[in-house]
Length: 530
Image (spheres, helix red, strand yellow):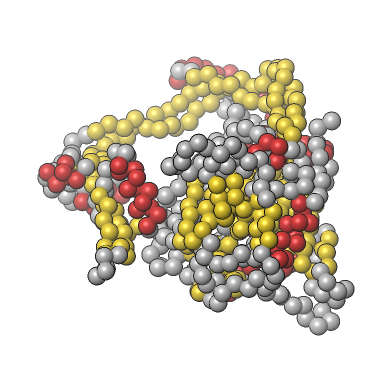
């Protein structure tokens, strides 16, 4: 257990903290902190509408981006000592258990409890992290990373318009949208940005879904001024109709145009291909670009080297080092015919695999792009809306259990929505669907001075930011889709310095973590719908 001590006789500056609880004697440093998010039902309704109402048919949830708070080139995390439990281990059982499956399931069943938390950061940008529903007295609690709740760039104040969407997929809210009411975290994280305490527990109001009733067509000005549900219909028109409409209504009227995806066609190799080959293969030249089309190795080997169409694209077909997790994923994909490349592994003298790589094969293709313009006219509609209560979070999706002061080298399953690129620019994940990774946690802790980390637990994984805040579940039951939260993803490390993330870490969950969780788990929130 680590404690950040206050200077003797020194004053403590308030940093958006509304209240703190004292542990032990009156002179002891406080362990927990809480902040109000949406203070009442009307405030919570406005938060829900913020995410579900915008000026077109796509809501803000689908437009938000992953919250990549950290530096792109994460420094190597140093190995420290072991973990320091501050008492006996403990557990709180999960809720919402499903019936046990009759047969073993080969694939991992994703838990219904996981989803995304959405918020507005200090820059005013719509962002998201990963999170999970967790067991609580009133079935209304979410567990995630502290940096997905508290903005360390804005004096550690809570994020604006904070909501949780379990089962999130492409803007859909299958169980409703759950607005944050109160955030609980460790005092050392809220005040000192100590990432050894990078976790938070947030009580949420009952879920809501927003729907539309009567719709009315309005002018563009009326549409812009209306604050409720609204949408735009688009009708494709010809260039001549567009010009006529612009002459009548002006450039700011409902007649619109824009460049769209160009028409792409295969062409013959240009005469100056060898002279300007590098330019053709990067930015293109005279509207023509040299790209690659993936093939199997035998087709690649039989292809010529003359830069014609269907010749070897050797610059795209190099061997690339990968992690064991990616190797196993691609091996499964190859068995299903979904991966055309080759997988390689290097073994030591004892026959143990020590490194893995992949090689894909491409043949050249010369393509020419021709610009295309889309023309359309817009019609504007407003909708008299309604809001519906979907019930408590735990009643909808259940809640994971909670455990603390556990021994190291536990097998855990980690879930989340990885989305950001690796430091070298490779983008292995999209963030559209939840992913999982698993293994035994490290026997030693990880240390990083920049974030005051002294005792993080590590797990080998190629997860990237976007998975921040996702749960680490011990004793995970694939049949029940439930386990015990024993951590949340906090940091991402590149331990072999090859430009790829290969490590994720979590704060160690000890008795102080349990005390904060229990405090949050006993708080009621209620409905925001009259």
